[in-house]
Length: 385
Image (tube, rainbow, N blue to C red; front, side, top):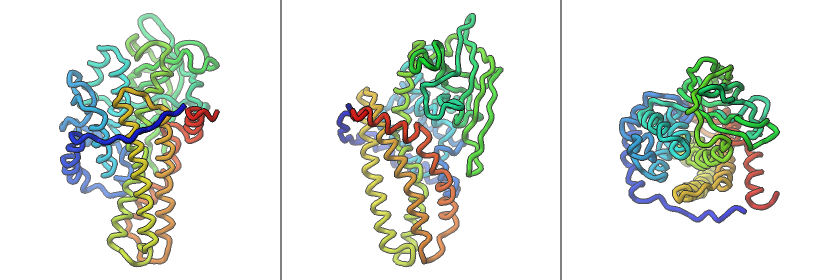
């Protein structure tokens, strides 16, 4: 049964990070047009990630002995919230910092921690996630990609798809089958680290409606990996993935994907106040959206509080992700509707930002688990199925 989600507050010592981050971002993204900033956590820029690393802002939650700052999840929450609100290009380090590093820290060996975590903190190791597979839809448990023990290592064959930044990443953490068959569902699944430059790895980028190539299909043909590529216990992959997804589904990125568009529209309303499509109706709509955002943020902060307590609020995180992506998808629809009304012509940057966000919005409810899968999880958590 889904439990209560008590409200939480970001501690003052973590809120104290905000002014420095904002000052940094005012200079760092000043020359990036809003239609580019709208890509934010899909914007791949290794140089920007290295600048964050130079300030000690990658691996904030990692222990100091592994190159991190030894801070809690709320410190990272403040950083992420500011980065996304500004539309900073964070995609290069995003997955490694958000979930691959914490996964290795929690389930990895000491050798894995000492090898990977410092490199993540220095923006020298970028990760992608290998979960979805061709022809399986959202049925993550029907994994067929297989790693077989062979001598002093693993022989990997299979394919992953919709893998963000695979063509730019150094490593993939892949969910694979090390025992049984697809009919065994959750049993026999393990997680392994794949060096994406290893012989037998083939990466084919997939271009989206905006002309970007964030996603890829990754094919493994007799890829040989060392024994220590395994993360955690063999056969424990399903439990580990679910712990990982709590990080993926509950953060600010699940409510702020349309933040740059919302901000540009609000700026336009201030400049054209009282005329045409900047009428009282538009201002009232903006107020409702901001109130909606405030509630979603409170829920997201509350899930972070649960994570800080060492819990794994999988169902609660799924609820935040479902409601958050619904909100993110609503923003370009209502902004397009209000801008189509009689009034002054909106500025080009706003319209280009709207065009990009509207084109990408359908994908918001796919990444991190489709709406249908998440609602099934929520229903089970509430005892409804």
